[in-house]
Image 1 (cartoon, rainbow, N blue to C red):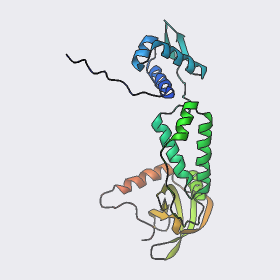
Image 2 (spheres, rainbow, N blue to C red):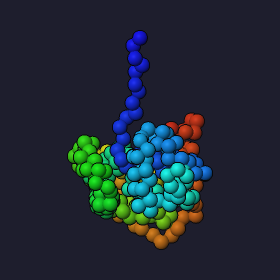
Image 3 (tube, one colour):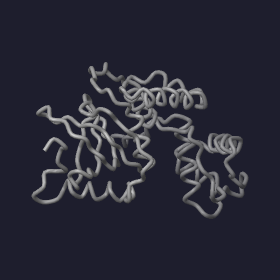
Image 4 (cartoon, rainbow, N blue to C red):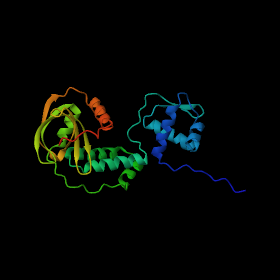
Length: 247
């Protein structure tokens, strides 16, 4: 008789294992034995005890001891230092992409954020971050002349924006809008807003906007509500999404 195949779990990093241990402890409201924890994680009891000690040393409120069981006190929040391999790849790839965008302040913020994360990561995760093979290609030439930081601030503060918009045919018009979203495509940035001129949702390409004017006037709707309503219009029967401002 041929021996049964042994199914091995994929090898995980120590940081991933510690994260899994915290998640398992969160599922148990009563003390759980070290042996039960070790079996669930697929590690030796000795490794389990070392991991418990490591988490306790990092501030995790784990109570108990060998032979009695362990319990994680409620309210513990994971520090933002423990990431899976794919989470690290997502963070690095996203930050690198943003760092190459024409929004200079957002690009600088992405670079700074990645440096801050790297500074506090455990050594093994810092090496994974530095060695990730996911790269971002060179950005295309952009012709935007407005400060996208002003647009982002208006969205955050729910304030009206004024600007001159040039449509695809070259005609220009002055607009006052209620901005609530900014989409980043490979070659263009597109602002979604409620247009006071059209009395409807419109999309505005940033490279066709000029004479941008930030105001202190709060628009009368909540941004989250407008975003939900706008999304609903994209799927509405008979309507091919919100129209562009050039109509």
